[in-house]
Length: 112
Length: 479
Picture 1 (cartoon, rainbow over the protein chains, first blue to last red):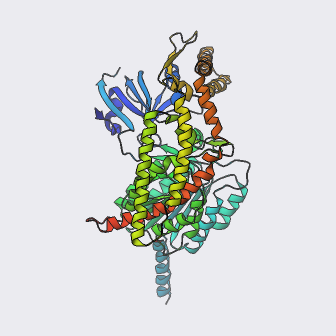
Picture 2: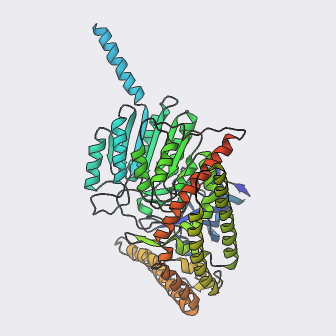
Picture 3: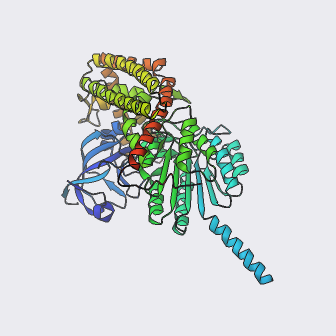
């Protein structure tokens, strides 16, 4: 498993399967997102479609790991998830003692 | 003669500028009710005001605090009138202040000092640190805050990295709840002091006391000790020195469950003990808890033994008794919860509606953890938007129906598995049980202070005798 913490370099163009640590959030306009590296320069904001919002409702504002497929290049810090395969609650890691934050590339794939 | 005069004026001006190269940045006071004239953080403004008055020539001061509370604003004007005042601790002002501080730090000569004093409400860990509340909205949760009114303190690492790079001295005080999460930005040039650990609430008393103890010539480490001794309220203050981190790592995780309690603050639940008991009601976890407690007892008894030899008088017996009593109470609750033999929380239930015929499978854990009515309200709010196309409105309506259905299934779980209802009833009992009240946890925190301080001095001795002496940016930061 390779880590894509330095995604700002070229992550935006790498599609594939990822483990993403973050939280589901509801924006003021009612839109749902899954945000990784919140509040940092490496923040990534995946806008969720209705089905994904339903899937992730139990994870609102909670520290979460999702395994998801990304098939479209990022537009700046914004992206989309093609499919969410797995979800789980995780313990937050504020001191960065583990790798439990950001994006971890599991398997690269082609961008559509 | 005129030339000499000009040279002298010039010299004194450049002396003033050079001396004022140090920076004092004050921020916070957010998340307070809008209809009040003061905030609970005002007391620290008095202490900081004194420090500012006595050190005007040494520290260039900027303040972004509160907003919309008349008496607090008067206090700011009275105490910091000549400094750079930004009324309102808004996300934008927070950004501007951090950007300005970073810019100033870039041109500061090596050895100069920067103080960042933050006193606001704080959330649990998020990102590399945590978030604090800003002006504009009262706090809606004591654990997670409210999404719209928070700023992340992760950007403080930009200051600490620059301090290290440019050989500056940086001191950050985070006086908020769960502030221990901010220790992660400390480094060899940055001292971080926090009002509590990452898992616990704090009151503003620690930051208030700290601000009043800030006197010229004192170093941050000694003020930390003084402020820690003087608090009688909730919180587990921490410091980023090597000894502080070692002492914290030894006992804080083990003490954590015994500093949880149930209470309310302005109608918001302080409910960490509820979550802790619910998520630990399994035989295997109860065993782990017992092992952890034995480890804690060992450490505390070791502290007492070392103390007897050194003839100082740390008495951990009181702490041990309080811990054992509280553990007994927690064990009784856990025993009741374990005996319920709750169905496997990973059992899945299908939620489906006409528009979502394939629906979604949620585990019991997910269903019980979710406030589906929140999502129903969100959808109802979205439907108020008159600019929605019929197609968009239909989609939102179908989501609303789905979440209503999920709520029904959740409620059905309580009927199908009465144990879940019993679990709720047991947890509801906590609300009125004095044996899990703030007072119990507060007494333990108070007693734990002296154990922590003793352990700290033991760690210091250990480090002194060790082969590598590392820098202590807290002791080196002399006000």
